[in-house]
Amino acid sequence: MIIPVFIQEITSKIEDAGFEAFVVGGCVRDMLLKKSPNDWDITTSALPDDILDIFKDRKTLSVGIKHGTIAVEAECGFVEITTFRTDGYYLDNRHPQSVNFSKSIADDLKRRDFTINAMAFSQNSGLIDLFGGQDDLSKGIIRCVGNPGVRFSEDALRIMRGLRFAAVLGFEIEQDTTEALLSHKSLLGGIAKERITEEFEKLLLADNPFDVLTQFSDVFADILGIDKDFDNILWKENVRLLCSAKKIFSVRLSLLLDGFDAKTALEHLKLDRKTTCNIMLLSKFSDFDLPFEKTEIKKLLSKIGCDNFLLVLEKIRAKNPSDAEKSEEVFEKIIADNECFSLAQLEISGKDLLDSFGIHGRRLGEMLSFLLDAVICEKCKNEKCALIGYASKNLF
Image 1 (cartoon, rainbow, N blue to C red):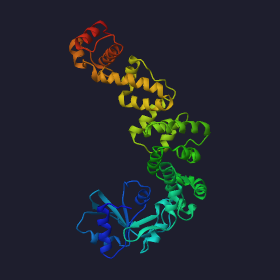
Image 2: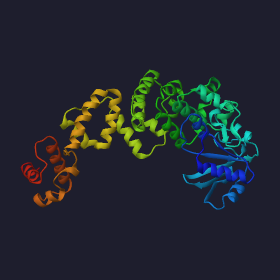
Image 3: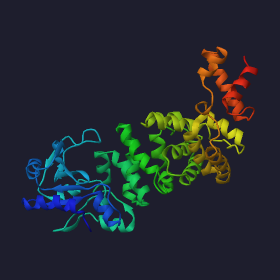
C-alpha cells in the first residue's frame, strides 16, 4: 500500500519520537480496494500532549483532545491523530461516557464498528488485521467487530453506517449483523436527525442501492416516518426508479417517496430549506407528463424556473426517458435562442409602464405578468415598443 509522503512524514516523526503510529480505518479499507482515500486518520501510542510536543512547529487543533484526538496541519489540510483508546460505557447509544488511553493497537481496533474499518497499516509493521477485515473485503461482506448487538447498542448510528457501506460498496451484510441491525433499529429514534440524514444521503447516492433499500425497507420506513400502512410493492417500484435516476439527492428522494407522505418523511429528516423545497416541488410532479410544445415548456419555466425544471426533467427521465429527451431538446433550444420566459427577460420594466400609463401597485405586477404571457404565447414580440403598444391596447 502506498501512503502519501505528507502522511509518511507525520507517522515517521511520531515513530522517531519513540511511539507507534498507523494509518487506520477507512483509508486502509480504501487502499485495499484500490481506491484513493478521501481522508487519512492516524492512530498512535503517543498521548495527546506528546503529539502537541512532537508537532510544536506546526499548527494544531485540540478540539477533540478529551477523546485523544489532535488535528495536525499538513499539505492536504488537517490530519487527525488519535491516541490508542478503549471506550467506556455508552450512556446514550451514541457517545461513550469516557475513554481510556491505551498502548495497544489491538485495544483500539477492537472498539471499532465493522471489520473492514478495523485495520491499521504502517510501513514498519505492515497490515494489522485482527478481525478478518481483509477477508471480508475480498468476499464483499459487512460484519461487526465482535458482538453486533453490543456494537449497535453502543452507537446506534452504526446501523445507518452499515447500511451505507453496504450500498456504496455493493456488499452484503452478514447474517448475525443483519439480525442485530434489525432488532436494534428502534435505537435510531434517539440519534440526531442530522447524522441520520447525512448517512441516508450518501446511501441514496450510491451507484445501486436497490438491494439495501429493499432488504432493509423496515428500517427506512421507520426513519422516514412512513411505517404505517407501508406498501412494500410501491416501495420496491420506487427504489427501482430511483436507481435509474441521476445521482441528485432531491430527485432520488422524491422518487422514493412518490405515493408516500413526503411531508412527514421530510419532517423526520433534517434537510436544508432549499432541498426540502425542491423535494416538495418534485412531489407535485409525481404523475406529470412533461410538455413537448415550446409555449407550454416556457410557461412551466416561467412558473418554476430553470433549476427546478431540470430537476423535474431528471425525475421524469427516470420514469419515461423518451419523453424527457423530447422536452429537453425543446428546452435547450429555448435557452440557446435566449427566448423570453421570465419577467427578468422582458424588454420592458415596471418603470416603463409607470411612466407610460401611470400604472402602479398591484396593477403594475398584473400587467407585467400579462405582457410576459403574451410574449410566451407569441402574441407580442419581446421588444419595448411592441410591448408598450400591446399594453396600451389591453389596459385593465
